[in-house]
Amino acid sequence: MIKNFLKLIRWPNLLVVAITMGFLLVFLIHPLLGTPVFKSGLTLLEFIMLTTSVLLITIGGYIVNDLSDVNPDSVNKPGKNLIGEKFSTSAATQLYWITTLAGLALGTLFSYHLKQINYSLIFVFTAGLLWFYSSKYKCQPLVGNMVVAVLSSLSFVLVWLFSFFALSNQAQVFTATQSAFPLITRIVFIYAAFAFLVTLFREIVKDLEDFNGDYRFGCRTLPVAYGTGVAKVTALITGYLTVAGMAWAGWFFVKSGHQWLAGWFVLMVLALLAMQLKLHQADEKKDFSKLSLYSKLLMIMGVLSMVIFYLEI
Image 1 (cartoon, rainbow, N blue to C red):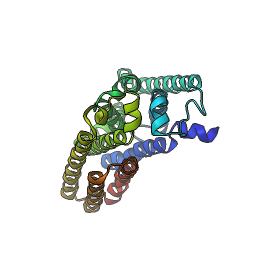
Image 2 (image 1 turned 180 degrees about the vertical axis):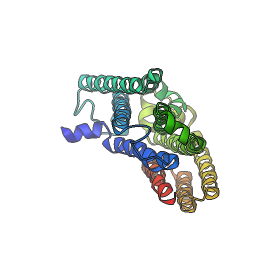
Image 3 (image 1 turned 90 degrees about the horizontal axis):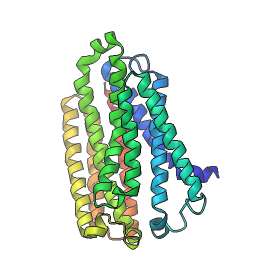
């Protein structure tokens, strides 16, 4: 039962989200601020509250997505359906509401604690967008892909946004560190844009992978609505935009004195170019499945690059 539950909530994905948020705070934001972690800005308790809220809402998003995918997954992932086989629809629905409402409550409490209660709407917006994605946007060509990509990049933005608010409540530290804010914002934007583009690439590839089930049950994803050729070209364009963005980021880090980090970005560019070549040749479900996995590995490479950034400071 526990094993099936962990599969349902996608525990490896949750681990990556938590590590990403932690790495951003520990290896990027505070080193650039020149302040000790959890001693200024977000406290350990506040960071745990933020991360847990994000993870709970993410779990709710995974569950409601699976609820809407019961029929297509019977074709796309035969024998792997957890909802309807290991978990009843009603149990999964209850779990969705429990995790989502708990995430919203914790996010609201966290925002109130930072004296930024208005920004609790971010958590409401995220949960609502995940629900609308599963019920409506998912089967709209490219719209659903964009929604997931935006949400993927949001975790980067949230860590810096709420760190900024926490610092603003500490007048002396805020004044002493504000000169670092533009550089931190720029680098956080680089990572958020990277997450957005890689996720968008992967989501289009996943639509190609799931073409048969989506077509059968009338889900008008990009390949269903406009053909697999158009979807492949769109994925390729997204991939090359990502290559261009990573190349620019590498040059930015060279100018900033981070040669090793720039070299790591060159490795990521080469990895993505190899993926692009495979995408040109891909025409079967297994090909797109491998590309989806490679996209995850590329995202992990991006997260690990923050460690290199820290070591070069």
